[in-house]
Length: 268
Image (tube, rainbow, N blue to C red):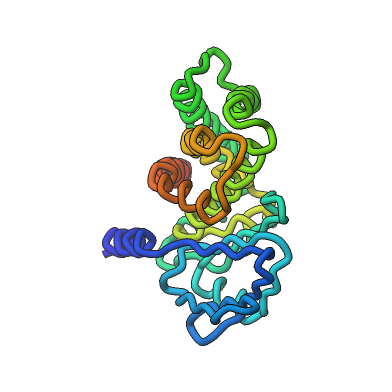
């Protein structure tokens, strides 16, 4: 029964879509029953039923009503807030899937040094794998798999393709998407990254986002080649990245399964 419920949850995730709200349109977000109501001056009001929303990415100082935020938290829809340049400022998350016990498992071991060592090993292992793949697909040598070194090498390559300014714009959008996907993955398993950090646990959300950035590097570079020094409009850019979301979700699923397995093994 439990596995069936998890499958249903995954199927629902695939049917939902992300919502992007930008302050440049002077948009505001309110609640209308079970839907988000996005108002833009001079345009018809837009309604987005919560059951069809995968996540919300809000760029710049967009006014939100408390009721709209409560709706997202009630329905476990992560809301990622970025500044006007696309740099992630924070993530608002609500309750996770109450049918999963991963949160209780983490709560039981969050202070145990032996589990933290296992978690750090998992993070290094998955990160090393995605770094190796990202470097190989970029045609770069894989003799140094340190994430910071690899990130700089990939950024230099992207800068050469489209210029530093356009490259920075693409990188910020990929980072926002990675952070949103990380928050969403944790919520689907009943976890809140902010609540775990409050208990002095590891930054699961940030760690997973770091991994997913490497997964999104190849599509980001493809966009750089396609548009050169003139990045596309934000909706076009977001749609192009969204088409590659499945690969990132597969890596996120592998990561969360390994974390869960480490929890169960250490509690046996």
